[in-house]
Length: 343
Image 1 (tube, rainbow, N blue to C red):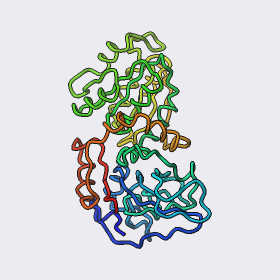
Image 2 (image 1 turned 90 degrees about the vertical axis):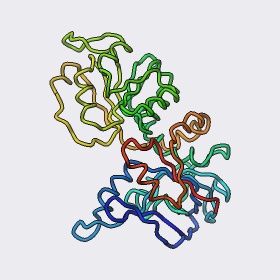
Image 3 (image 1 turned 120 degrees about the horizontal axis):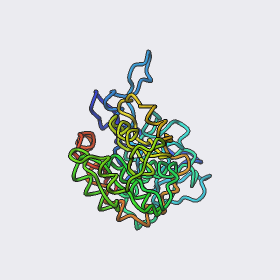
């Protein structure tokens, strides 16, 4: 079968590898769609992962956002049958995280599900959901965990920095949670238009608007612990990872506001601890999806039209190198999904 791995720095290769043979406790999935993530870009920029002798780089089998259909089921597997459409928990593989340094990658024609257990390593989704939308399951679980960590209430006023897939996913989950006012901040007009299309109440173009002034206008006036004027924003979500976000939030946070950090930080800024003290700002880190990986699956199906708006490009597997180049070029795409033939 064909599989995508990291090649030279900044490049991928489509290689021939043996098609997996499932054991009695395993299942085999024919991959039908797989998303490209910023984590893939990290491996490309490094040219692999430093698992070789002396920390040398070795290729990485890419793809941790697959959706597909079951083509073989081991005799000991319960709850799965050939033809089921499934999404996968990349962190459920005993051989290592799928597409993130483990031996398996979801950007392949077939993917072995080791120790296939429904609800742990794999979940079935309805055949009414397109495979490309189902491939959003993993990143939407990341976004859902972020929102869960925020403990946002319906009466809260929230701002999301970054209108990439995670930020937009967070905006969707916030609105589905009943949060009354959600603002999305970005500097790419097309992404801000998508934010409004998926349900954000307002957007801010940080390249030409004063973010703090606009938040005060949208969320009303408030103050920090010293009575200094601040926007009435209750929760800030960092889905951008830019140093400017931390700087903006610490300067703008009102008394007892929260900052939820879900983005991989591109560069850690000097944090104004005094400003955090003056607002009693709570910093909450959000990593992965401890419980959310399949919590989101039925809701993804129910609200599939809304989530489908996050996909900007669908690229055939035969053109995978172009798909990765597109996904990793700043501003060129929102969410790229690689699609596979029926086989």
